[in-house]
Length: 180
Image 1: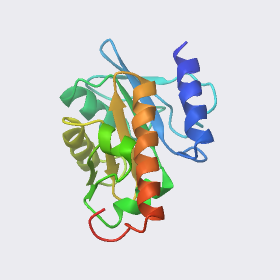
Image 2: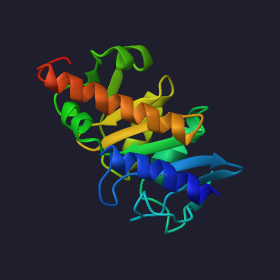
Image 3: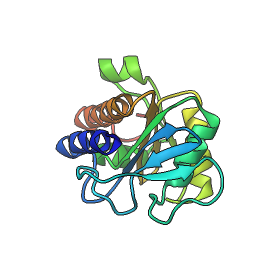
């Protein structure tokens, strides 16, 4: 059943252009840990996720970003995470530390989107993303991608979509440079 939910959200992410190839990952909190997409998995293909315990070693087949997911679950009440590589959000992250959506939906649902640093798969990115998600639902890692969190994968997907849409509006309106 969980494999179908991951596939459904993965297809939405692909259709909207929020991920490509085998980029990105998703997870859902469970009893004693969380289920996460497997390393190298295509998000739109049905495949059973890997279970990562709350503490200790992660299985080899777990996404390399499991540290981020573990830190978010440890430090926030969120129950689901979507990590994507939306092009406009990644591009916007190169020029600012905080994205301020100019569109009405972005302004209402995520009036500020923090940009943090950290190399993929490291403790640094895990700490920075978890810190940003303590008080919000979406963060962009500079030059890498978004991490969105919520009660469900659907909610995390929606925040991912909103962030990309907001960044696209900023680019089209000419607000790319400086404080966005």
